[in-house]
Length: 259
Image 1: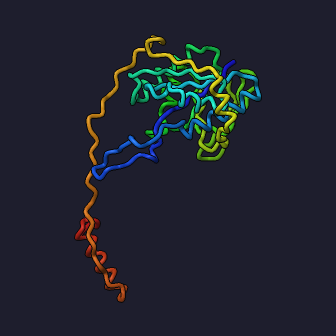
Image 2 (image 1 turned 180 degrees about the vertical axis):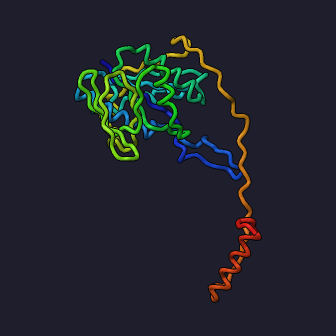
Image 3 (image 1 turned 90 degrees about the horizontal axis):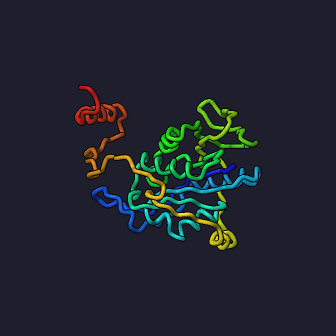
């Protein structure tokens, strides 16, 4: 049986610059393994060690996701191998296109009992991929997961819900969205980085998988919305009653209160 972790190789938005007109510039932001997916990989490592399962990472994107630095960064975190779908058509791919591609990769691998991924995407913060991908696969989907144990194809899962912690018992295959604090993702050491170069990294294109991407909407422009105008009004607070009256008058004049 195989445990698969879907990971994202993307620019860290914390390194992006925002111009005065609201445009976001990622030119100086370095791509990296998503912090959310690093936790999922770590959980996959624990499960693979406990069960003896094969641990495979899958990812989809443009040319950058297939570079040596990208595949080694994933393999250095403990994956046994990676299966990468790299294609120009996946540059800036949306949720549906990414999900369709990842489904094709999983179908190609076969014998997958558990699919792990982070609970959010690094670049957009979207939390929809898990549900869309599970729908395409026809698998149960469990999100906000803190803990997973496996015994063959039997899984015991703990997830957070508003009321507390919910325990579930399922049979695989299952898609699991891992919380960002489920486990502590270790930082790869030099030995991990060196051994990553010896692990297999399979790179394929959309054509290789026979995938035709669905049509998605195109972002034509992003404009910064004008914020509310600000006025500096000084209120003398020596007389509380007078200060309250002046405040109410100013709020009514600004349209914040009914006349």
